[in-house]
Length: 580
Image (cartoon, rainbow, N blue to C red; front, side, top):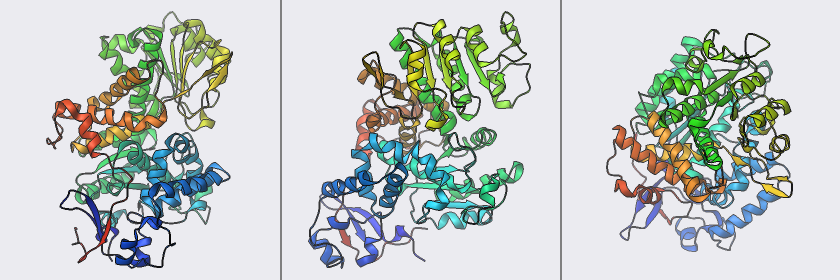
């Protein structure tokens, strides 16, 4: 059986113009989403590729097709219907999908990504239409190397892999997490610039602990409980080895793994192949950038803050790590930094005398630091921590809607003229506080950013924009930069370089904002990618040294960005050679 990658090749003519050479023609070519131009095939192409009579008479431009597609999108009656339309378009007409997305990124981001993607994940088995990505399960993991070879594209450089155990704030979603991988990779292309033929969404179907899924005959995943421990580790190891063998230039982004697995997998593989965990490192980087921007608005520095992180899962601990590094960067000692950083889990404040998972321990407070605190019980609550620590920054990654209540927010307002309050949990239904409430309870003084999109808040005659702490400001540029320089590892310094690139972009373009508008993601990603390459060279992990003048990396990055444009399509004289 031939693979899609055998049916077309991208070549360059004598005048340096690229074109597509394909061995397919007729109706089969119209079914190949990577190459299909639909009504934009020219008359000459229709004749030479045996499409004559198979398409409407009029030849359209890409822009005309975008207008038509946008009308169809706008006519959809619900967000999930809009999502389904975009996914269908992506599968059958890839260039048109990305051209449409690029023109309407701010409007469509909440559809292809959070919060609507959460609905798509939950309804995945019911909405399923056609195969996408790569599925490795307990039934075929023993054949992982053969399974990976079945993927229809050859030169994979970016992989998003999930086991669907901790999707957004909605938890274990079994096989449905594949929708997250697909959505993330759409942003790698739309915001980061990676050619979609170089990406591969992956679901690691190790089972589910949801009885309703296991007992549902229409559920598409494995009907058994999740693998744990050694069996899980062996499963992931076989996947990684297969990727290393078949796609040696690939970067893996680990996505939505449960907190224990997230830290274990990251530490196990980050030095074996270029990989990172977006929930840990991406969330940490984008939050650090937002807090630094908020401090600039207030006219002070990160080192002047007392910070609370409510939530000690992958995201919360990732943010704790990033803020800790930020405090060190501003000259504090590790002990001084630790005394300014308070992390709470579902039981309350992390303290050294508590029993807890290993990944939380570096952020536990010494009980001697709390000797003067007044608390009702042995473990300080959120409100008690805010009051006793005199916190000036409050960050939510708990997934507990409404836990930043009026008492907590007013306590923050008592500690600072302009408290920094970031309820970052996704999706919207899991947000710790509604921005309008935060402004009401702080008399409009708070600096607010959220994880999900919120409309501007009207307060006392003013319209206050709500910055979105979206990881898509970080991961597309991080992955693209690491790919361009063929980094053999993604270092901590590269993660932090991405964060400070975002800070610099906002300072230059939007000095009064916490985050930039989401429709500037591609501009942000260019700056992030350039800074990541620069740091990879400094760290000695860049294996591709011919990346242009290091003093003008942004221009180099821009020159490598894939754009959704139609290339001329010609019939191949002979089928492309197989590239196993």
